[in-house]
Image (cartoon, rainbow, N blue to C red; front, side):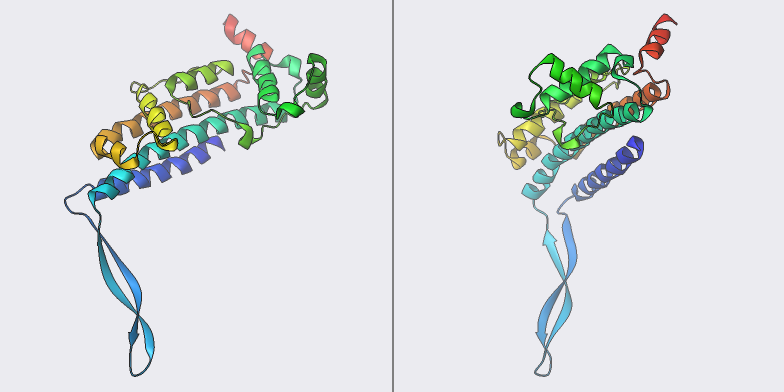
Length: 243
């Protein structure tokens, strides 16, 4: 399920970058047909007429900058899928909280504390423990998973480590820092889309796409192995460590 969602989103990104590549030519134009009213024998009819719209440099720069937002959205969506698929698997396995490795227990507790409004937070350790014990079917609300616009390679590796998932790797993974920083500048108005787009042309952006795909696919592969071997369970994790 996680892999199919990723492939769907990845294909969306590929289509966008294919469009970017197409418009990176001298004087690109958009050809389209438009229905316009035409008088014919005292009657008005809608007739299709061909139009040509020039794509100026500012629009191209805006689209270049938007590529970074699309890449960051893919990163965040994939990280949310990782958490959901792992905890769905745990819930479906019907194992108790004390059978989970300590790292996953901590993530479970952290979610309960972090992703609820302050008024709804358990007020004592006992109250929190009772809530977990009485509700073994732990379900994550996707909308409550917050990463604060901080996802880059280092953060992704930290989240993986927190779940006891093997850390992903890609040779160009450090490029995700730039994706994160530009996403935040654009999202919070630190820079305009045109200003960012002037700095990064299509040939400059393409490596960021490759690095994003590579690191996320490494992560998905590691999560798949993690789930197949049930490494969220104490006994499996201990056996694997002893081997």
